Length: 341
Length: 252
Image 1 (cartoon, rainbow over the protein chains, first blue to last red):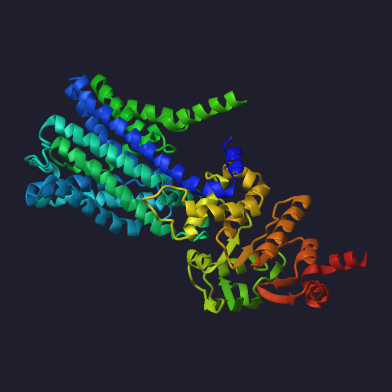
Image 2: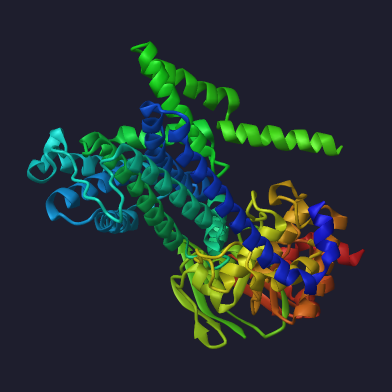
């Protein structure tokens, strides 16, 4: 159908049309984001449950983290086993800046993102030239290095006790993050803004450069693309969004702990992507909600959380062979095709 | 003008390309032939930067490209298509073309705008029309037929507006009829686009019919080069490559 229409319109007409269509897709995304934000912001007035708001804040932190990992895994085909280190670096640098430098929250936020970007640029410069499995292993090695550094550098980081004493949350622009509701709305805003920015990256010309690299990196280089430069760029961008997730987490628990930079965080990121699926933009977000719901219900019911989670993962990996969103989209397109016939 | 001067490459003790010097005039159409293992693909890999030459020069309009990276060489104006169609399986034909033009315009890293960019449209459209892929624009590359995938691979090289187009066995894996369709297409492209085309081909009937110039490689060396008539009568070529089978066939 679209094929036919494209042919009929002819050349002179369709040149401006391409740009309008891309404009329209962007406006649509902004609209969806705004709607989502309004709905989330209205939740507290509909349900008084503090647990629900806590759940959404944790979803914001992990959603940002998991979606940023999908920029690497799903869009570029770079399987990083160490993405959690940037979650940890974000949490720690934000917490330390707030505790020691006494700056305002927005300044610490931006500075923490910058610190993560610099760390990611250095680590990425070493990692992104490596092929598949070596890339995975070396990112994991860097993760363990960061984790060990946090444990060993006790005078700065508090070692295995983490950053204690709470993170000061001075009021800025009328926002008081020690107020639970303010923290909730800010987390939602960061989540929605972060997703919107990542969506823009995924749908930009650069996003298509990433898809070309994922599909066939050799061919991409013969189209004139500097593959390792593009990989480094997406590695740094993804790290920045993961860092934002870490900052939300640090604000939520009012501290930072070595577990934030441990490999299990990276593992959870991979789990989330497997649960939700990597072929759609919102797959990881769906996966986040799934994993956290599972986590909360299963830990309440049984001590054998690991076994239950393992079975669920096996079901998705071997049973469906894809994430929930991949499955849903596949089912929907198959149904539509059948209707057309 | 593409000038190759003393190009050499060894793998261990094997000289895959041995002191090759050749000229490809602007707007020429040249076939490269040679038995298996003659170094044809290596020759292409050296020119396009997939392999680094041990020695020699690759001069495109006087600028030496030897030792540069593939993206660099592509930007200088040498495009290539592969023996096994090398495409982006999950992108549609149209997306492939639009993304390639974007990359060629130096916009592969643009973040703040949406794909596709309006300024990439015309060239993408032109390339699809030229190769007859316009009616399959919405198809995902992976679902195309083998022949169409080969065409898409060539389109991917052509859409970059190269000065020189290198085609590594454009008819590989095709039936006789499809081969001729493909080769007619290439000849048509060459005539319309006025670019330098160099292609590797195994089918002697095709080579002698359509190529105004032929290069014969054997054990990494240039055995002969010239117009078809000259190659056909060249004793060294007949002995080394065309062989007795060819003698008998011409006799009949």
